[in-house]
Each structure stands twice: as C-alpha cells, then as structure tokens.
Amino acid sequence: MTTSPTLLWFRRDLRLADHRALLYAIELGQPIIPVYLHAEDDGGVWRDGAASQWWLHHALEDLASQLESLGSQLTIYSLESEDQLADFLIQLAEETGAKQIVWSRRYEPHFCQRDRQIKSSLTNAGILAKSFNNSLLYEPDEVKNKSGGHFKVFTPFWKSLKDQPPEKPLPSPVSLASLQPDYWPAGIAVSELNLLPSISWDAGFYKNWLASHQGAEASLKKSLSKAPNYQQTRDTPAIDGTSRLSPYLHFGQLSPRELWHSLNDRFGNDAAIVEGITRQLYWREFSAHTHYHFPHSTDRALKPEYDAFPWNYDEDIIKQWQKGETGYPIVDAGMRELWATGWMHNRVRMITASLLVKHLLQPWQEGARWFWDTLVDADLANNSMGWQWVAGCGADASPYFRIFNPIIQGKKFDPSGDYVRKWIPELAQLPNEYIHEPWTCPPLELISYGVQLDKDYPNPIIDHQKGRQQALDALAEFKSNR
Image 1: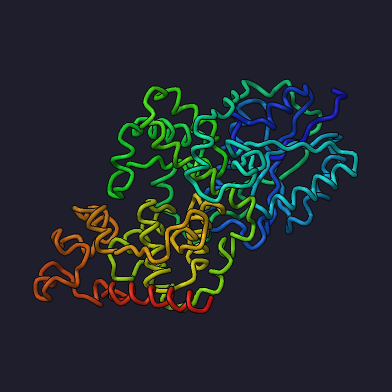
Image 2: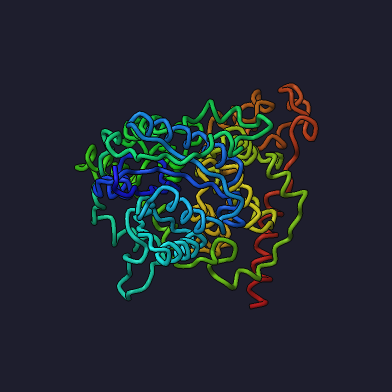
C-alpha cells in the first residue's frame, strides 16, 4: 500500500459510532492509524482528577478492544507535557508517512487555545490538520441571541434551539481491516499510563459503573425506559430516576446527538417526556457554550464583582464537608455517595454545595476542585457553572440570598430517609421524624437507636439559622462595599 495513512487522534471522543473524524478518515480511503496521546499535565491546572483517570483507563481499554474487533488497533503514547504534543505529532507523521491528522474538537478554553497552536504547527510542517465537532449538539460560535451576542440565560437559549434538530448520528463502521497501514508504530499498554489508584479506594466504582461502550448502550437503554417517569423521579435521590449518562457523554462514549435522536425517535409525539431529559442535555450544552465564550469562569466569577465576595476560607471546615461529617444527614449522605461511587445525585449536589458556600462561607472554587477530583463525570464547564449557580455569581444563577435549608430539603426529597440510611448506616435505626435532624431526638431515645452525637455522628457543623444569617450578612457586606 503506497498511500499515506491518516492519523486519527482520539481525545474525549472514545467511541466509534457517530464519530465524524473517523468517518472522514474512512472516506479518504487511506490507511488509518488511531492514536491516543496522554500528557501528564493535559488540561493545565484542571488536568483530570483521580475519578476521571479511573474512568479514562477503562474507556481506553474498551476503545482498544473495539478497534481490534474491527481489524485495527489503538496506539497509546505517554508524554511528560502537553507542550510536546505538536512536535510529537509531527514526528509521528514523519515516522508513519502520514500527511493528515484528524481529531475531535474540545471546547474548554485551555484546549481551544492549545489546539489552535497545534494546528498552526502542523500546517507549517505541511501536514493537513482537520478537526470536527463530536461532543456538542451545536457549535458555540453558531448560536446567537437576537442581538447577535451570546446567551447568558438558559431559558432563551433553550427556546432558540429546542425546535432545531441536531444532525443525525453517524453509524459505526463495520470493519477497518481494509484500512490497515503497512507499518504500525509502537506504543504502550493502557496500564503504563498509571491512571488507576495505587490504594483501592475505587472498589465501589466497579459496583456502580461499566466504563465502556457496552455500559453506555445499557445506560442509554435504561434511561429511555425511565424517561416517562423522569420528571416525577429525578429529584428523589433514593430512587434510580436520573439518566446517569453524564460520564458517558463526558468521555465521548455516547454522543449528545445519539441521545437526542434516541429520545425523539422513541417519544417524539410526547413533548413532555422528550423535554424532561433533553432539557438537561441542553443545560450541558449551555454550560459548554458559556464556558467557551467566557473562559475566565473556570476559576473566577462570571459576574466579576463577585470575585470580591467576603469568603471565610477554613481548611478544617472544608475537610469536614469533604468527609461527609457536617452533621446534616442529607449533605453527609451525598458526600459519602460521592466518595464511594464517584457520583452524586444532582439534587443533592445543589444541597451540599449550598451548605458549603452559604452556611459555611467557603469559596465555591474549593467545592468545584473537590468535585473535579472525585466525580467520574467531572466536566469542567458543567462543574464550574453548577458551583457558580449555587454561589449566585454565574450565568442564570440562583440569587445568593436563596439559601437551601438542608433539613427541609432532606424531608422534601428523601421523606422516608432511605437515601440517608443507605449512606449513613449509623443513623439507620432512627425513625423518619428524626432522620434529617437527629439532634432534635431526646438524648436517651437517641441512644436507644444506637446513636450518641459527636461520637457516632456529629452535631451540625453550624446551626441552620446562624449559617443562614451569616450568609445574608456576608451578602450585605459585599453589597455595601461595591
């Protein structure tokens, strides 16, 4: 075979179905060399957290297996720094004789800037560099409001797009055997990337996730079966009522176009069912678009005046929150679920975040960093926007003076206490009336249930009313200094 091969550079697009870069490479009719380049500092200060690395390990193993089943293979490389990417790709092209490199775009600001530099270096070296949208429904630069600017509020963003069907997903190739190159470059095994933890804190991950194409398909099928009841169950953490598709979307094992069209093909005549889940898909889209246009929002408030908010950083308080030892059962249950499974129910994410930034006055960035390290679906745009929403400083944000009462939230969304009992077994014997506020139970009666406060389970880290007033006072101080 004398034609030059195409290097197919995989990133956060770890699938074969609905893959535009892959289809483009196939249509060229030239040999394809799939590669994955892992740089230790990929993403800069927001490089993958521990839970994401766990998922990435298994997703790469699965992708390699899929490619092998089609008569191809995945070649993996490890680099010390992402600054080496451009030079390494040029060297790899020279080694393999490749004249073109194709990949899927990433829209986080860090990667946008870096990829422009890589594309420029490749072009100057005489290599065709072409990228494709494989992670969003719409290109961020193509979605405009009526003034020609960028949306800052979700509802008009949603209304402008919800009746515009995205392109249909592309099929997976049947075989790649006829597109094998004459020469395969030598790479390393996935295990040599050292993505898995050295201490087995991830045991619960294996019980809850199948980080593969098979897992994505199974989760999609299950989410479709749950879709008719989604609106009724999505806020109840004790019920498996959400889609749980977020890590598959984040790592590109499922495309948003596949999800959108699967929902509409099955429930197209029932707008209420379709919009229940697609609205959440468009929140993901809105987060990505906002992050793309306002790159500072990863670390700083989208509303810049909030960078001067009088936070009261306290490392000990943050650690208590991280460990699920705040004394508020619904919060602690969520934090323990997060540690054990790499995931937390979305309603509980809001409650736990509100306690940290409102009652405890800790910077939202600290919560965002912890979620980034512990969530298997740690998406930079979604994570940053979610925390800024709670802190009242982001796009379409909840007002800062809206302060969740963790007791009322627990009683409302976990009325029977099943969620709390699952994740805080030391409280399992408490009756419903005390499960969300055990400190109100008479001490002798509490002991009869096997609980002694500050021994078996902590008292609240702060009284709700005191925490609420503390948050309002900080807001008043902030406003008076503007």
